[in-house]
Image 1: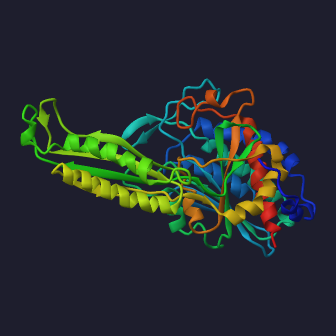
Image 2: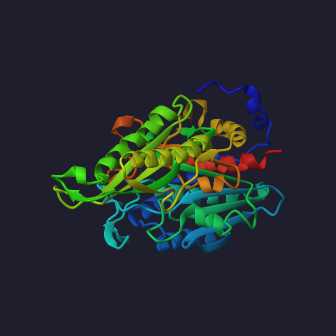
Image 3: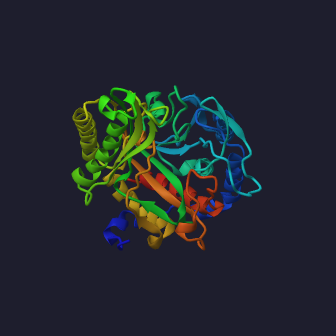
Length: 427
């Protein structure tokens, strides 16, 4: 990372002396680890985080905070009021686990089973949400203990269903926003972070603008005319049409998106059609996803997908019905550029300049983006990979082997606390 301009750091150098957050985070680390192990051993799926929510709410109430439960079904929100005028700062952690069978030998591994879309499935914190909750609880303890030194309010948001609500249900950040989580008191800024299994412990990664992609699932139903497989000229073949549609969609990214400036992905993840080898069916269904990192590319993809699907279907004498978006959509996880610039010195002060890395955007998604649509937000990555392990060897998120180090959480606690303290000092 380029050396930061000294003038950028000056406002924080002249700030009134801050408490020793590093020491406070070090002192609470054993408790943070204990919390994380509990959440990992007893995970719960999206919109089913009942016991998790109770565990979190009980602790926040023990700190003397004003706690609201049942937000967006199982969400927990607590407010720390300093009693002095100042900004309202929201800090967010997600709570849900995934339908994944854990393949680790940890003494606190998950053996929990749960119900996912009507089926019994194993449940695992395979994306690090257990660490996110533990880090935010640690930050809540530190900030509550220094209440007399704060100004304004801090809103702690423990959110369900970041991984998506079960079929037929609503949930996650979108529902929390609809239910007023950013109101009463009105939030001025929101901070969030995500543990990263392939980033070294102690490292913080950031990016201004789009850091994670928008998600737009879609469905295409191609209808034709059935026939015997031996006489394809009597058919209007939806399978051949579907094959051309799949390949045609890829040319949107490769030939219409300026890849030097933007990134986009079109993926078909599901194809259904036909019953046997010698029958050309009357219909094929495709389900896929679009990922984009800026509004212009997203708007272009919407237009281009419809154009390609219709044009190819027409050329094959078939018809095609496009549903876009299909059942949900996430906006771009967009870090407010001004806020990012203002808080960058905080990251440097917290972990050191050599451990603050500017990163490229990723095409994964986060529903933290729904908060950022309403108020300026900053979303960061913190490292959870052992220093001796290469990134290529690190277990991937959403897999049975996923694992991150407890030692990475102390960095997250310090970052959340220092972002809060420093934003409170903004003129």
